[in-house]
Structures are given as C-alpha cells and as structure tokens.
Amino acid sequence: MKGYGQYIKDAREREGRTQEWLGKKLDRSDSTVDRIEAEQSEPSIEQINTLVASLPISAEVLLEKMGLTVLTPQDAAKLPRSLVQGLLDLTEFQLGIVQMQVQGFLQSGGGPPK
Image (cartoon, rainbow, N blue to C red; front, side):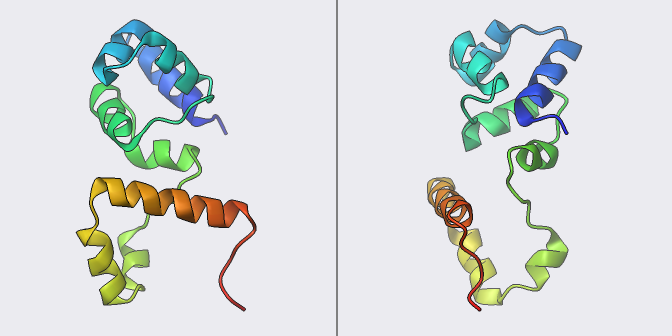
C-alpha cells in the first residue's frame, strides 16, 4: 500500500498542481510539502483539513495511510456513553494531545489490560 505522502503527491499531480501551490494553501513553504510527501513530516490536523478541502482525497483514507484508525459509528456505539460524550467535548488541541498519547502507548507495545 502506498503511504500518505505518495497519496497526497499523486492527488496533487493529478490536479496539475505544484508543491508551491499546495504550500500556499497550507500557509507553509513548498519544502514543507516536500517533507510531507516524503513522509519526513506528518501534516497537522489543520493541514489535513486543508489537504482534504484542496485535493481530491479522502480524510479517512489519508488518516488510515498515516496509521491512524478512524472510529466508525458502529465502533462508537460499543463505547460507554460517557466516553463518547467526553470525546465530543474535547477541543481540537486536546484531541491532538490524546492522539499523540495513544500513538505512543501503542508504539511502546501497550495494549488492553489482561
């Protein structure tokens, strides 16, 4: 499977757009776009929103290619109501912190208690 960088690059090139154009959309330099496409840097939540709005790409596919799981409505229905409400109440910044903590936990070999 192609990674997120190639996914973004392929969509940008299909649209006939340059890294400079995408950098302007992201309010960043074309070298930032190059690093994202080379997967040396991951786009922020705000940048993901801009990428999805600017290119013919799916947020779900992009997140999946970045190694992030999207919670489906079916999965959410299995969670305790208080947890779902707590997640809905989080700000974008707080969600980013939770995401980084969960990724670190999973990368360290963490898992559900046995």
